[in-house]
Length: 183
Image (cartoon, helix red, strand yellow):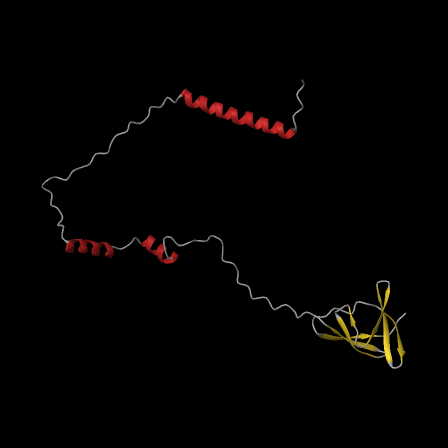
């Protein structure tokens, strides 16, 4: 039975496995062949003993306090003292990046405004003192009178032959639309 040809991804994986295996084999051969340098001998450090007739420090508490006082009075090396004063502390966090520039706070966003009335004016009709304006909403004609609410967003407050005053309900903002130049 013939073996199916290997995909390029499988070929890459197989080559990677062979390469890693070769490196491990060479490393093992080098490790087993040995090294001609002799290993250093381990020895224990020897302690030097003080002579028996050497004076011993008294074990009193006052003497220990004096020794600690001398230790605290000892001056630190000038370089490390300057570095400690400059950086504040040994374990303080040091940042290598320069500090971020201070920016002024952004001005508040502008107050939202009502969009323009979205429907083009087609014409108007006055009947018994009631003005009706006709607007195009897509392919439909939209008749509008004073007091009507259009698309739950615009309330028509008043209307005459030249203009219409309406309120954009979400912002409670009043605007005026000219009613001239209809088709």
